[in-house]
Image 1 (cartoon, rainbow, N blue to C red):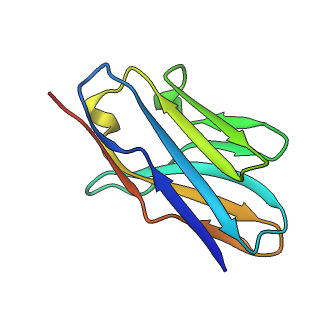
Image 2: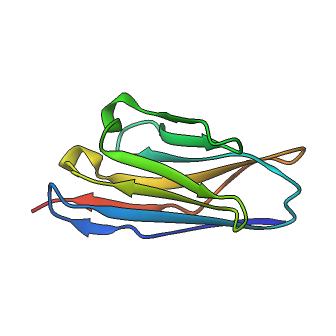
Length: 116
């Protein structure tokens, strides 16, 4: 079994910052990549940022320069530092973990709301 647990969501004003964390635990042989996706009401789930085991990253164009993804390979944890938040960043944020020979695992999601 693999568990993926997110934390760090909440309510923040436009221009503010939040830091999301996601920890993977359980029967993990090797993690290929960890990433963050988000889904706003009425929209499809979309990639926000992803980081591989070697440290390569990719970001959605809408968050480049504002969000930073990082990873602690020892703790099997990924972080998403979100700065200069905008109302359009409001969504449920999901953590995804790609594990060698096991496939993809998702967290339960954490709500991020950017509003006055």
